[in-house]
Length: 270
Image (cartoon, rainbow, N blue to C red):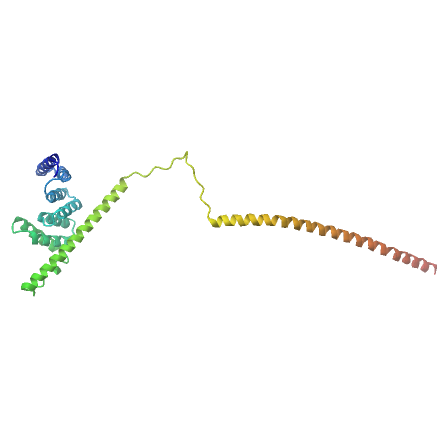
């Protein structure tokens, strides 16, 4: 059972909403009907339909459609909920959807003013719907065959309307989420002081390359020292060989020079 305070509050909100609607204050009426729903008011499907009527008067047809869908979800046999949905769909120029909704509502409605309103709205929607005539039963169908066709068509229309309402609900949630995200301020930048920036971890490939280079440097250092010593030894050996060769060359040249001088003296004597 609902608490008595909530029930009384819902009734009071509904009464104030009806008064505001009659006075032409549709925004206040919509807010009060919504409050009555939140307080657990009786016949929530009727309250949702009243919200749809307020939104229609305000020219907010998407909101009216959402409220009408809520009324149908609360009570699928509530004719006025389907009527409010058809009105919103026609205002949005979704003519095919409006035709389907009107036909379903007419099937549920009893003879009377509500059925007359639905019939008038259906005629208007069919005039603007490019595919409405294709929905009618062929003229050659009679009797049970026509009845069976109409029953099948109503089931198809019900499934179509259910899917359409589900899509409307998805679109409404997506729009609300987008609006909520746009209203949120951007996150503040991180503080410039007191923030420790960690260096990125090195992967195994980088570590392997560093170890390989270090090992190559360690191995190449002795080799370079050995190569330098070998070059120095080779140069010393070369210098020694050149010095010995020069000394030997000087020794061999001295007797030859003496013989030449003696020959020259002999030639002068002749």
